[in-house]
Length: 274
Image (tube, rainbow, N blue to C red; front, side, top):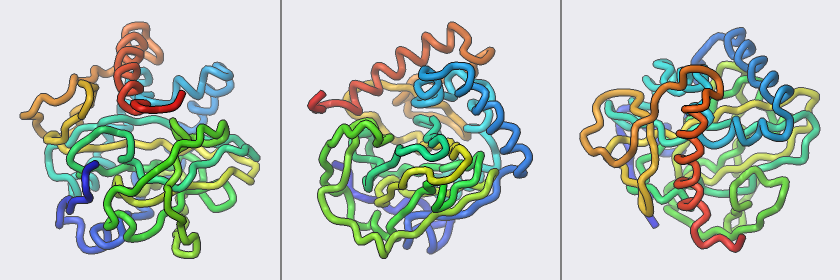
């Protein structure tokens, strides 16, 4: 598996040393609230199907999310880390309803992604308050320097991860930091930082839109997937481009995403017991 790498010195010592930056304001709170209302409406309108619609590659089928992935306020900060030529490899919601048992176990993002090298950054965008009470993300500062660690699969239903993957090694939770975000703020974290989150104990939904950015020289191992060019030039052609959807859940966009997600699922679930 890929080892950790140093990605961009321009962002300064904090990201390099700690593996994350937070909080970063990217939009007014009112704008985030308006988008959160739209997301809540999708959950209300589509019931059990909403989680899938707003999950992997949600930006393929919702124009507002496509535009959010390309938001200059986000991409400007990502460029400080990855450089000028940037792709969005995937994006989707990690939402937790009020008083919901869903959680995210301690893990590293890269484990099953099949991407090389590990010059990858995740933007976690809060549309509603993300606090310890609502199950905000927690990180272990500096843990990305350990490189890729071993994981085991649990397939626990309440775990929001695809395989319920969890670190093989124990995590000292006293070292963890809560990444508290208000609506319209984001955090950035390294693909190998150890992180997780607890369930939502609050009376409000926790809507977090998670965007995975990669430099254009990154390669997908095990298949050819899609990525959206959000800045600069792609001189490598390692991925298929993503068109902007013409409308919410347009049939062409839905078919495109279904095909893209099937390829990505085969990569992420390779060797899985189920």
